[in-house]
Length: 341
Image 1 (cartoon, rainbow, N blue to C red):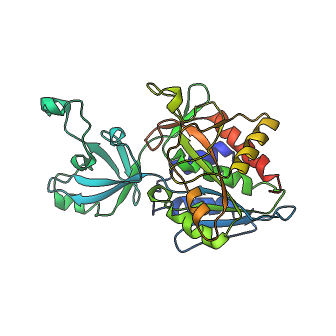
Image 2: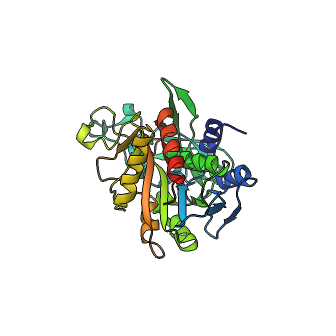
Image 3: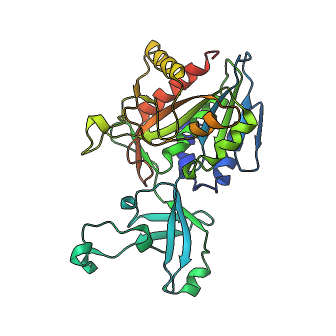
């Protein structure tokens, strides 16, 4: 059986922004088809899996992660052969200029270009250009040549390598949330104590849309969302606004911009972590959001919990996580699933 780290690398390398999750979904199905009790893909592309455990649960429990990643969409082909574009999901424009991109449909490479510092006026220097002033250079010098390769609506993602570096760190695109997908695959391929549902959701990065459909189909009593969340242990961020730290263990949220999490589940997660010597930390600011809000408000509603991996430079070409934190999240979720909650 492939190792978790090999699966994670393979998933992160797949280009699959919101609305184009087919490639990563196909790979996930290959990895779980011989282990899942039942699975199906719905009309919006969500992959919903049921895994029979040794016992039935008193409540229907769903574990969820999203398949999509942030990316870019072509909006116009210019006369000089460069491409206007917009972002798919929340991307800080400061991490875009000069980046190498990979187009989803054929793997073609593009480079995000902007005005060189030598050509900038005095007032332009040190100011990050808006996305509308940037262009993707695909090596064409005319509109006609470019239109043979791309069309309006074509999408691309950051082109970057999955690499281990330093003292047990990983950098890659799409760790948000291919990590959650890889962890769920690992659980589906193992023996579970209790019956559990899993969902690999679409379009989280543009509004948590896929989870809305899953909530109505599965109608869970409890939804546990696996995510990546912003680690603030970087230069210039005070501890009071840090949110969480790399090497601090699994992150448990009380509240974010879309959800107030179930207090009993938050307490249970922290108690399980303490009982099993699993590193864990509470997220100390209200920020971000994830599919939990769709499960909490969809169908008849659900009690929700988010367990996240602290991730530096999230939504960039080089998100960074500590392997020990991913291990802590995995241990905590598995111990939680052993409880008949």
